[in-house]
Image (cartoon, rainbow, N blue to C red; front, side, top):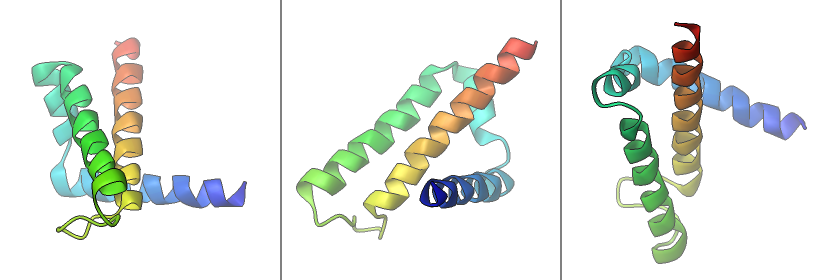
Length: 90
């Protein structure tokens, strides 16, 4: 159980850092294009995951690992959940 917490703590830290760096780019994309924007970003990560796990040695030419990609995918899922929750409140 403690291992899961370390993953979710890392995810929360990563989301906070990226949100500070990019502003609310994800939320703005959802507002502008709808939830298709979330699906596109998740699809991009899924495609990268396929490439990393099936067609390469687990690290792409930019240095992104399977773990990095999984963290990004989880992050987009969490961001989408937050957008859905925010929508329900309005």
